[in-house]
Image 1 (cartoon, rainbow, N blue to C red):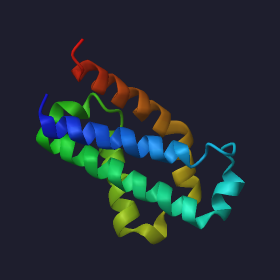
Image 2 (spheres, rainbow, N blue to C red):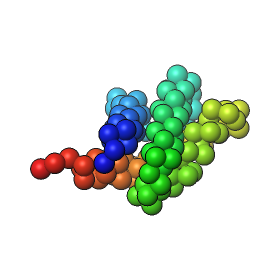
Image 3 (cartoon, rainbow, N blue to C red):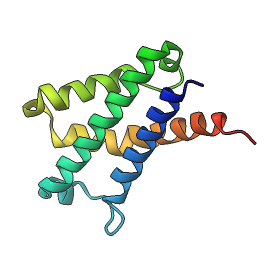
Image 4 (cartoon, one colour):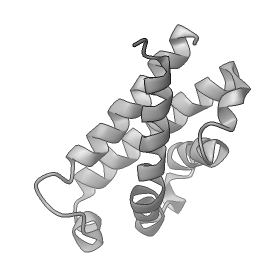
Length: 118
């Protein structure tokens, strides 16, 4: 695997781990999330990183589009957060955190595992 792609996959893993770390001391609760603007901005920043890394990966090797569920939507979210930040709802981000991020975490772990020699 291309070393750049491996680095970007690792960047996605780190961003997911960071997002998860924001909820270690307390249970994931939407009403608490909505109240904490610093946490929301940190989550959004990591989603930007994830989207940019996925964008670079699929531009370098389009076969990853089929290996990463909703890769195009992930890139689209990144663009929305950056360029249409005023149209992003807390509900949308929360749905991504609770429904889509766990799937992405599994897929990225599998891709990284497949590149690690035994």
